[in-house]
Amino acid sequence: MMSTPIEQAFADKMKTEGWEVYHNGFPDFACVKDGKAILVEIKGSHSEKLQKHQYEMLKLLTSYNKPKGFVWSPDVSEIIPYQKFQSDCSAYLPNRARPKTA
Image (cartoon, rainbow, N blue to C red; front, side, top):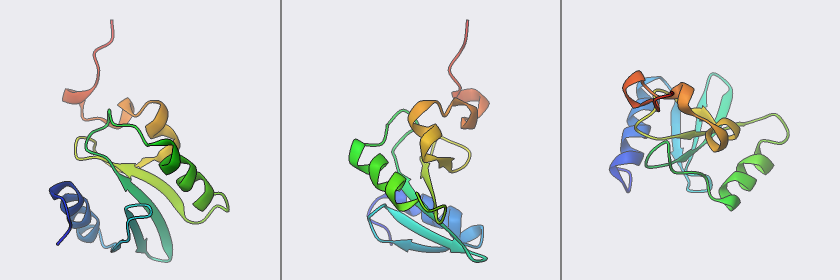
């Protein structure tokens, strides 16, 4: 059992997709599948940005091309590369949650 419902939802999603899920907290999750490893930071929503130290840690840990770093929140349709999450993740939002444009 994970410490928050959001973390549990993420772990359940990834396990359903066949990933081995490790909840280590630095970043929040490490997931492994078919020889591929990803690091995932969990956020409560797409509007919550990574803290500077979280961004820098994902950047450092992924600087050698393996593993890849991602962010997930329950209001997006998939995990998002951490660089895009910091700038604009609207393309990953379900249509009903996308910001309206003029």
